[in-house]
Image (cartoon, rainbow over all chains, first blue to last red; front, side):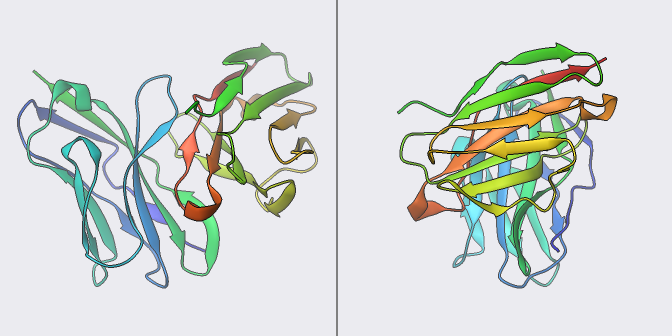
Length: 113
Length: 114
C-alpha cells in the first residue's frame, strides 16, 4: 500500500519569502500525486496534481511542484508567499498497487508579516 | 456550479449515542468518498462509492459505521454507537466520471463525542 510522509509539521516563513513544503511517497509504480490546501473550517481544495508527463507541475495561487522519481519526492514550492497562504497543506498519493487515496499528516504553513 | 454540501456542520453527542451525516455531491459526479480526519492528521478514506455501488470500504469500522448511497446521488454515513475516538471531522468528496482522480471536498462535519 502507498504511504505518504510530510516531514515538517509546521513551516513558519515571512511574507514575500520563498517556501518549500516536503512530501515523500513510498512507491513509484503508477503513482499519481496531489497537493491540497485546507483553510480553517473548510474542506480541502486541490492545488495541483501529477498524473503523467512533465515532472514540473504548476497549480493555482502561484504554487508548483516537481515529481522526482529517483528520490520519491513531490515537494511543493512558491517563490513568494502571501499572508493569505497561511493554511494546512496536504500531500496525497494514489497508486503503487492501491487505488485508495492516501494522505500525509499535513504541514501547517504560517506566514508572518 | 454548487459545491459538495454536507450537514450538519457541527455535532456534539455523548458516547454510545448514534449520529448520522449527510452529503450531497456535485451534480453528475459518479464517485463519492467519505473520509475521517482526526485532529492533527490527514484524511483517512472510510468508503468510496461509484454510483450506488461500493468500490472500497476496507477501512470502514463496520461494527459501528455504515454508509449508503441508495439512488447514486446523496449519501448518509452513520455511527452507532459512537466512541470517544470517533471525534473527528468527517469529510465528503466527489469526483466526475471523466476525471476520477480529481476530488472536490465539502466543508466537513465536526463531530465531538463526550
